[in-house]
Length: 330
Ligand code: AHM
Ligand code: MG
Image (cartoon, rainbow, N blue to C red; front, side):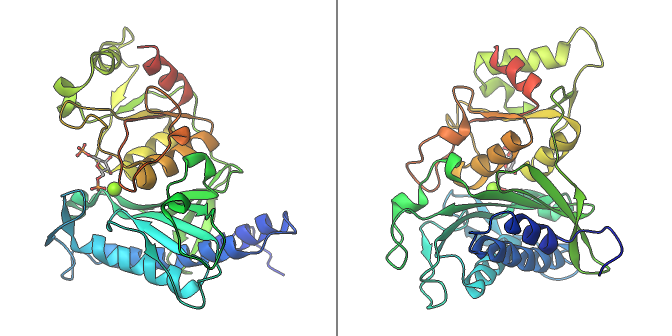
């Protein structure tokens, strides 16, 4: 019997699974696969400055953006781990245009579909700032064994079985929810395992950080400009601080722990904003709500949006409930 109180990710998931005697255990195995790939990507991110994994790959992804080498490596690592694990029938990835159906004998009878942004904030790789992996887990709607359809993949965020992110920051942390609160596990590299470090995270309802790319200010709708003006000119001069690094996982993670609002609103150039519903908005919205915050497009709950295409984008306002309510009042 162990005598210390350190709870590993595997132990935590096994304990959660035991609360549901009918659980198949497949979701636990998916977390095992995420964990394995996360450790490999973590290793690659940590040595990015030493070996030739920095810089542009010379191709563009389906959104027309420059792809970095590490994006591709991370995409391959997560796909490979989930394929070898045998509990996922299809993957959609920010790095790929179409559904990647896994047709191995091992996977063909599995029911889970993964949506993944393998390395978000990749413009930060070259400058040694925090980046992250974001994921969602859904259950397919069509019967197992057959081809995975667009209907299986394009599900509303409220259907997420689990969502999470891995932040490769000053430490590496896996933060996730299965709909029973949000827990964070920090990678202890000395033992090579993720250990529970932040149980049952609740985002403070009152925050004082606003995170938005103010370089886009002139392109925002007037109501967003008015809210930003409010944050800038608040009567109590110390009320709000701007913090924005341009890496969603890092900006989101700080606000989750300290309290704040993260926004990527529509701009005149991008009427739906920049962030992708399936890969960035839905998983972060699920975590936000599970931590007691609010996640909205400005017009409605992100988790209720009906997806129509894999790579669609939507405006995002999420974070501390009092701050989001104030933003919505504009
Ligand atoms: P990416 O998926 O190409 O990395 O882009 C998403 C990133 C987010 O992490 C971040 O919130 C946003 O882009 C920043 O965009 P901008 O530089 O326009 O502020
Ligand atoms: Mg991204």
